[in-house]
Amino acid sequence: MLNVLMMVSWYLPKDGADHAGNFHYEQAMSLSKYCNIMIYYPYDRQVKQIEEGMEQGMRVWRSPYKLQNKIRNRMYMFRTMRRIVKSFHPDIIHAQVATEVGRFAIILGKIFHIPVMVTEHSTIEASGVLHFPLHQYADFVYRNSRYNACVSEDLTKKLSAIFPKYRFHTVYNGIIVPKEPAVLIEQRSSEAEKNEVYQDEAAGPVSYRMAGCVNFALAASLYDREIKGIPMLLSVASRIKREGMRFTLHIVGDGAFRQEFEQTAARLGVGENCIFHGKADKKKLYEILSQMDFLVSASKFESFGCTIAEAMMLGKPVVSTKSGGPESFVTKETGVLVEREDEEALYRGIREMMTHFREYQSDAIRAYAVEKFDMEKISRKYLDIYRSVSGKNDVLQ
Image 1 (cartoon, rainbow, N blue to C red):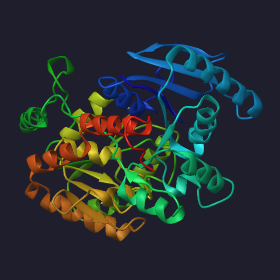
Image 2: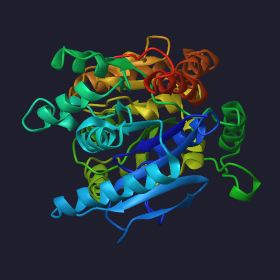
Image 3: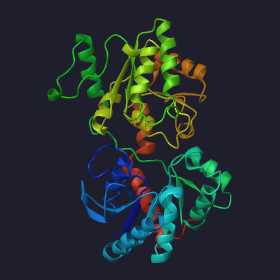
């Protein structure tokens, strides 16, 4: 079996305080069925020294990082990689995000003679590749990477235009297919809604729906005021309420701006129409989404749009801004696309969905999403790429 070292730009903290980096863990666990895999996180601000151990069934290396200690950071990376090479003998380094860990992965790959591939998750706006010095960093990575993957067709097209000398390929983020069919949760929540009661969590999934109204959700980390479009969404919600429509907007996620958003909702007169669920693990997120009538994404930009894909895995239609990634896979059969940063367009899209969400075919949406995003299929695709990059097949460049 191939030995794959996944170098990540963000990852789960050891104390489990949040869920940043959970995707990399899920992807690595899926890949572990097909290859030997380790994760190396070189940006850990919590550890004091190089650490290695099993974390939730995955072997993880961590090295200390302090922004002001650039030379020391690089020394830690070199020492960690030397230990990894000695004990694990990687056949390939799979770096996540070029301008972050990718540039160091390329250097380490050259030092230790290990081929490197890159998966790009960052949007053009977030990565800063249009400007010095990040443009130069990215050029260095993409030039030396043996395979450049992007998580959406939109990102592939944009990077191909910015860096026309290099080839980019689309490999969607993998999504774990929910183990429990969404229809079972929907049936439970429908029964609870009819009786206007909520289930005890010990008896099964809690009913998150509010009775007698349209329920829709937005799921995001609330780390920025504008990127996820929440102020605009709350303004749209206020307008819909003034028109007499009955609805509940479920906002799933936590972050520094949660309190501000709660205050904004109250000020706009939709505080009682909004439920802020806070941080949710994957089980709770899927339970909430499976009970919604549809999902909304109001983002300014998204490289992919994981929660959109997750909602579609549960058979839910979506309303999404044309923020980048979603244009690659949201179709008229699966939802509504609207212009980004356009409140009127978002309002029209949500009003249309509130009227017509029952007309969408849940089974067809789910089948489409599984075909496109199933984690196992994505992992097998990466395995083929690993085999090629490691030299066992023709190199893809």
